Length: 258
Image (cartoon, rainbow, N blue to C red; front, side):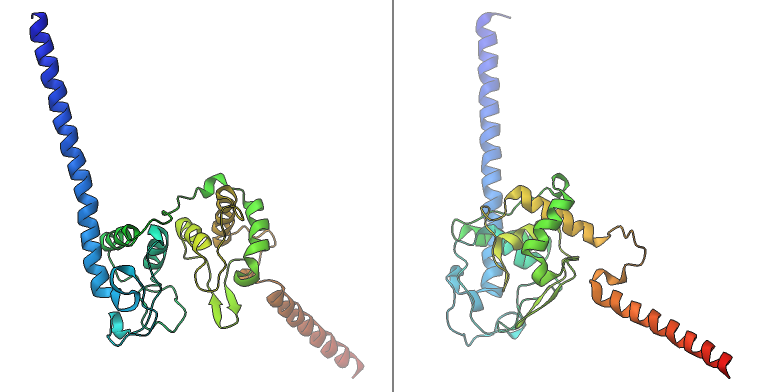
């Protein structure tokens, strides 16, 4: 084959590769556009009643009923990014039956595809934080315990079993995935404070998540776990055992004296 023929074939191959790459790029760009369009439809049907058109927010209660008959107000979603939308939708916190109650983990109402579409649409409304990608396998359980005790145990208890705070409930963390825990830490849902990276670095967050995962099935060296809720049940068991022993001793002594 002559040199001219070789150059011609090479040129055709380069051109073909360029066309293929361009086509792939158009397809890749089309998919997010289609996903966002689907998310816009879902948002208009299910979310705009409380959060306003195009995520502008609704500062006053509305008269129209939305999902589940809810008619109320919601904050602006512009600039919250994919982070908040992913957390609230995947935990079932949203949509709310009524905007006047604390969001609680409940049945997820959307398919995974619809959640991706809604998250993509909300993320397109304004520049905001992306979905975190935690790596708890790189964290330290002991360090996580220290950090969790310092920052989280006041509401969630040291065993991450949940608790009560004024006018709210701190949920148990057992159902949460590592990503959902990371999202909650960065968002600060409801009364929970938001922890920035300057307050809790990504590596420290990995350790916190590693500890929370450990609490799901901890190794109980003492044997009887008693619910992992602290000294209260331990004290009750101690008093119960002591009471039984005291009654038994009393009855035994009484029989001997008679």
